[in-house]
Length: 195
Image: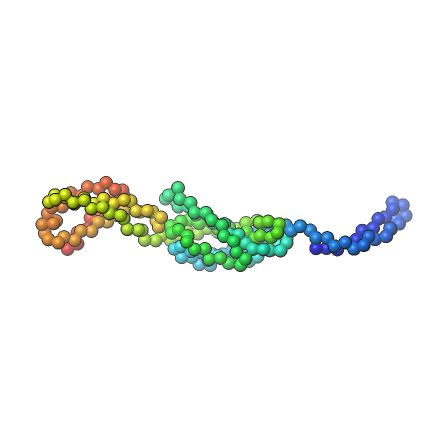
């Protein structure tokens, strides 16, 4: 906001005319510059706590912040996790992130003029987490074979590089009937006999 007044001058003799009354002028708000000192303070397998300082140039009344994040997995090109969060604070704890994902975060200031410039991008790779248990179907042929069928486990918590099958024999006859391990699933399956 500013106050101003105006008067005119002639070209000869530089004679000044009277001043206009004082006028109060309000300019429209502009967008702010980028938020400063954006830092990931801490992270877990599924969350990131991010802090920042307000933009150096506000160009209006700061009404809040927008945090945009995007996640991808190097081993699963179809996976994407994108979201926007709004806050009035200079920090945010983003939860429900996905393990084993590379995330990029950007923070924007908001005024009545709109959304400002993005902060410097932050990158973080979330740690792997334990995989889920496979769904198993058991088919038994009397006195011949036991067939195990399982669906591949989701790679949401990290890439699956192998499976392990453990067998605990109840009697010696049980092991002698196990003559072959046919593998139809990828990745590799290892066999462990517990004695």
